[in-house]
Image 1 (cartoon, rainbow, N blue to C red):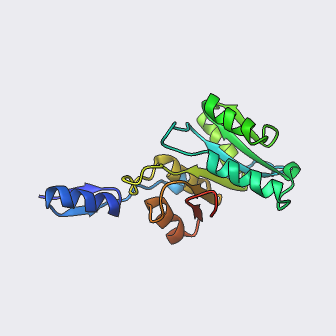
Image 2 (cartoon, rainbow, N blue to C red):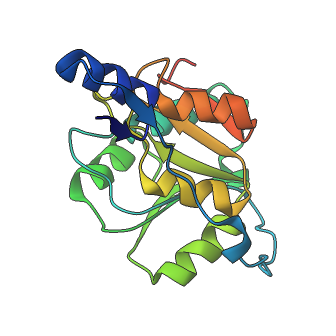
Image 3 (tube, rainbow, N blue to C red):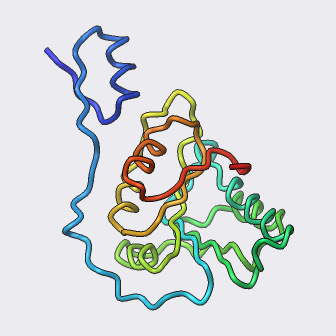
Length: 184
């Protein structure tokens, strides 16, 4: 008699397909299960991404290109900032890093245990979230996004389209900013 889903965008799609009432029960996280960070602050302004990057679904070139622009225009000194990627080392991501001449600033560390990833999230100034690059999937918000929310650090989300579920949650919770392109 009714359908449920996790976002308003998905609810509209389901309603259009089935002409049934659709109720939204958003994803979430249990904040009380997250322990306080005991990590030391980093020497550099640190952006951290944890997890896999999906080819043709996410665009790590957007924040890398934006960082290159900020360094080239003198807004940021390359000695004062780093982007850390923890997860499977991807050749295509490494090629991007090298093409932008940022091998000393943007580093892929490889896979680490989940608990270590949580610590790296908590000792970061910003968490980098690569939204899904699919205009038909604006209602998507991965579990990584909720894990980031539970880390208690500001989130820089990029990619996708304006009006996405991720953008709406960031605006509503005031937990970060959303930049759909490298020009935002």
